[in-house]
Length: 179
Image 1: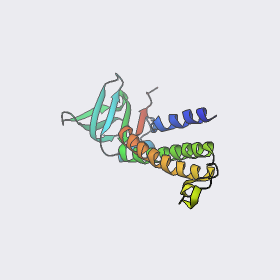
Image 2 (image 1 turned 180 degrees about the horizontal axis):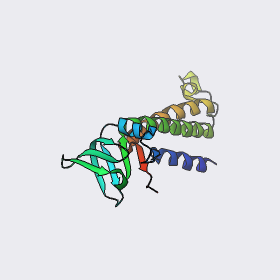
Image 3 (image 1 turned 120 degrees about the vertical axis):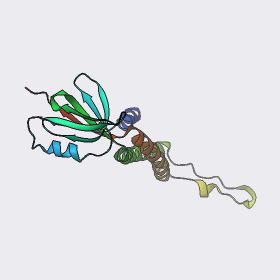
């Protein structure tokens, strides 16, 4: 059971988040067109021949898309029918998603491991009235679960935030081919 849960949580942690929207080029009033044009920053434009272009200042309409090529700095205009997809990467949103996934994964695993390890056995009395710290460091299963959730949750949040920022969250707009 623990192994299956670990695999599921690991898959969630390593999975990057992508939002996909289908756009009908014939529908110029689509909310997806408006959402696409609200995106700022660099975009990856994939043409129908699978050529990928790194673009900035992208503006798309139902008949064409215009952008500045991020490599050459030259403006380009392409018919919408030649575009397969447009993708934007958002590192900040990816970091926040990674933070949440990492925190939940780490806290869950830490709690399960803490509970599974059980409580510490009772302390034996110290001989000759020597100061004994045994009781101070003795933990119940619930205390170990809380400590595990806090420590592994913090570690998971750190790893998740870093991973999420590097992978990023992606907004992808796929253009439907004309019928």
